[in-house]
Length: 145
Image 1 (cartoon, one colour):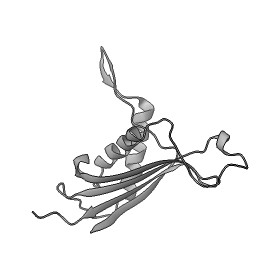
Image 2: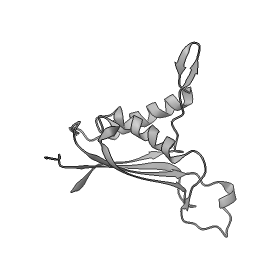
Image 3: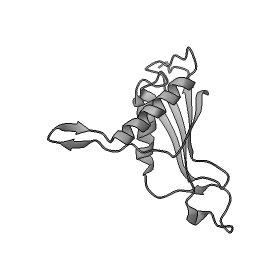
Image 4: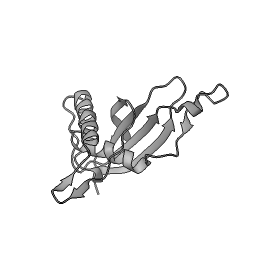
């Protein structure tokens, strides 16, 4: 029923989408945050399959794994070599917002309302693993009522 149409690893530390800031001069976004979003969009556009045509009414399922660099306190010999669940900041919902906003700027997704199923996880990397974000996008045949 679900078919994987796109799978991509985004190297580097996962980045959260910060809230916009308001001042007398208007609304502004953090420049580092804006640059990170542009970098993700560029990577997604470069790896997007040629001729992919996701329809605006097509339901999507999104699977995201956020893998953060393991802190030194978890690199001792007695610590496990496998991934460890991460329950510290940044919050998972803010990490998801960055990926969803970047996907909307590509042909992979028209609007985040298309996502009807979302599965996300947040981990400290395994001892032999680099920080990255793994995205898998699935689609189903258009629903006919």
